Image 1 (tube, helix red, strand yellow):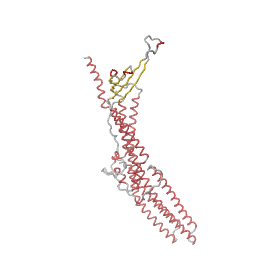
Image 2 (cartoon, one colour):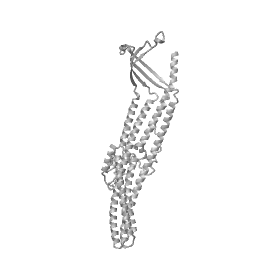
Image 3 (cartoon, one colour):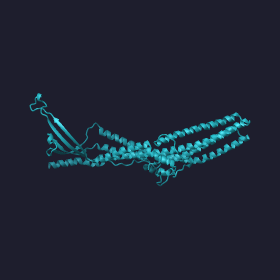
Image 4 (cartoon, helix red, strand yellow):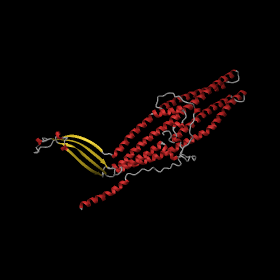
Length: 467
């Protein structure tokens, strides 16, 4: 009866701990965040159509650009670094899966021990040594009562998915950088063509004004102003060619290659095969890699907090050891030398210099940091999508006005030449008209580039490219 009472008391004492174990390792739930107004626009679709779900092979129609993007995905150094991070994370996932398995270790030892003689005299100290030989294996297993091993495994899984999302984010950024750099090259090529045509026209104008001066119909001021405009265009051409050189070097780095020149199409032939469909804001949560990466960071820190919380509770382990033990080498491996034992252990931390509580408090703080980073990533994504949409809309509307401006200024340039020949305008008015016409043509090219780059930026900001 006394033994039964002791067992009953033990069960009653440990029952609250067993019930509490159900509440130690909590389950993750996504933080409550406001995503309905991320895009700062009222013109949003109600379906799930999203530019981010389109492959870059379908979005871009330029064969040169698609070739360079694929080459960058294969060779870019940032991509290769991200892949190595995935490999490292995979190793931790395998380690987390093995957490449920018992550990097995083996050992072998030979010990020679000296002891004092029976009479205890100092002179005969260490006169009766003996040897001991042992070979054993130890099997140990910890019961996952508080969910510690489960949480550790989930944390490693989240860390792996975080590294995968980071790799996807690098792919998305890389595609956008390659496309934008390529379009920048095409815009520079077009500006070079316009500038070269302008230089040829100004050379002819300089020859004309010099002939008029010799005929007494113009003065040196007109010659100098015409020559100055020619020199300005020639200087501008050198700047444009230098920009091409530097941009090609930038593209070389993105492709993981040595600096070189690249074959390419023309700016006028660039079209994009899809409309600007952004999808509903909630799609950012599963399309944009950096947001997924931030959420996996929350999961990782949440599970690590579970692990830190479980350290407050006792751990239960079962250990089994078996092997051979003998005082004589000849009888070391023998049926008479076999030994075995089974040990059940319960370890409860009591005083450990506040290490467990400190670890738990740090884990809670890091979990809160991860939540804040997730919210920040959402706000940043909304800002980038909004700005890309607005940039595209503005550049699309400007295209009509800038095109009309180019036509008007070219007509003004032509009329100015006629009025100058008739004596109704000064040569300074013609020079001004020519300069304005050139700037308007260059602005039209820049506006075309802005449209393309805004589309690429929207594609990136929605998380396109990694699918």
